[in-house]
Every structure is written in C-alpha cells, then in structure tokens.
Image (cartoon, rainbow, N blue to C red; front, side, top):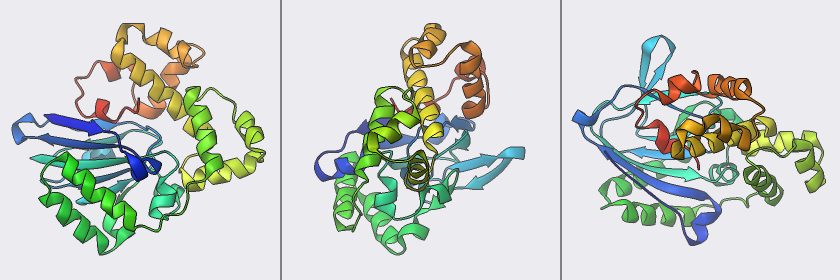
Amino acid sequence: MQYSETKPHGFSEHFVKLYWELAYSRNEMSGPEPVLPNGCVEIIFDFRDRFMTYHSGAVAEIQPRSIVAGQLTTRLMIGPSGETDMFGVRLRYESAFSLLGISMIEIRDQIVDLHDVLGSVENELFEKLAAANGLNERISIFEKYLFTLNARPVCAELSECVSILRSTSGAKQIAHCAANLRWSERRLERTFNEQIGLSPKLFARIIRFQSLLASAEKDRPSLLDHAIAVGYYDQSHMIRDFRSFAGVTPMEYFGRDLILSGLFVDA
C-alpha cells in the first residue's frame, strides 16, 4: 500500500486541511474496515476499481467515482473492490459549507455523488485529475479549480469557536464558546448544524475522541491515561464513546489489524 499526504499552501489553506493519495494492488486487499467520525467533510476521487460501502446485513453498495463524504456520527464500513488509486481532499471543519454551498446537515452520514453537487464541472475535473502524474499535479489541478469557485467567506465566529474546541480537545464548554462570540447558544447550535453538519456538543465529543485516537497511535498501552488527559472522566466514559463512534470496545478496535481506519484519524 502507498499512502501520502501533504498540507495545502496559500489560498487553499482557507478551505483545505490536507490532501492525500492512496494506492494499493488487488493482492493487498483487505475486508471492510470502519472509518470513524473525525469532524471533517472529504472530497474523494476514485480512479480505479470503485470502493464499496457496507451497510447492515452485509449489503454492499458501489460508491460513485467522485464523492463528498459528509460528517459521520458513527462508523462507516468501507472497503476496496480491486485496484485502488484515490485522491482525497480533507476540508477544514468549517469550510465545506462555504465551498460547496449546501447545508452540511443535509449530507450528514451520507456519501454524495460529487456530480450532484458540481454538475458537469465534475466530469472535467475528474478527467484532469485522472490523467495527472502524481499527487503534486493533482493538487495543482484541484487548486486551480478552487480559484474558479465563487465561495462565500468562511464564518469567522465559527472558525474561532472551532479553534477553541480544537485547542482544548473538545473540553471547553459550549456556553463558553457562545458567550465568547456574544452569540446565543441557539444561534451557535443552528450555525454549527448548517455549516459543519454537527451540533456543537457532538462536534466537541468527536474532537475529544479523535484526540484520544491520535494519542493512542503513539502509545497504546497508556490508553486510559490518554483518555483522562483529553477530558474523559473514567474508563466507562471512554468506552461509551468507543461504542458510539466505533461500534466496538477499545480492546476490540485496537485488536484488529486495520489499514484504512488509521488514515482518517485527524491528529
């Protein structure tokens, strides 16, 4: 498997958190793996054999070649169907609404065909990206596309609240964020749901959970210590979030040899 990622520069930093590229061959295929909520919306282009989404009851669905992956509130089971060559754009938490012009809560827990969002522009963009030589050229093509968009400005107040929650691993009280912005909690809730796709409290929980996953990747035996450090009260509190977001206990999650799951941990 080959995986690489890089940070954006210049204008695209306002919208993009990182770019990534994933490729592996048919003989490296694994079974379905969980992708966990990370607080981000992603745009993904699949240039070879399409990825599959697995629903309950082992029902599998072929993903479109270009997708917008909306905010997740629980795990999404995915897996390759063959040769893999993918280019992904992980958007900043608060930028997807500005960039795509659609309410984020409407695509929560959904895989949306990018053609339904961009129309015929998706065709041209996909073909150029498919013909590109490597990650840097794909990034250049995508960033040229960004320049053509009439994206609305990202909400500065929302960005400030996101920064507060990120810097505290989701521990800061939502009431504090609202008061800091001189907003009502209701206004903050409405803005979060529309522009991020999650309530402020759920977003904060996901940020805390992601902080734990990132720490655990470096030092798994000290999982409970990491959990306490990022704001969990005790072991049962941590396990509840694992069951909610990953569908399993921490022991079950880390006991599997997962390839894809770790790529979407938002450190």
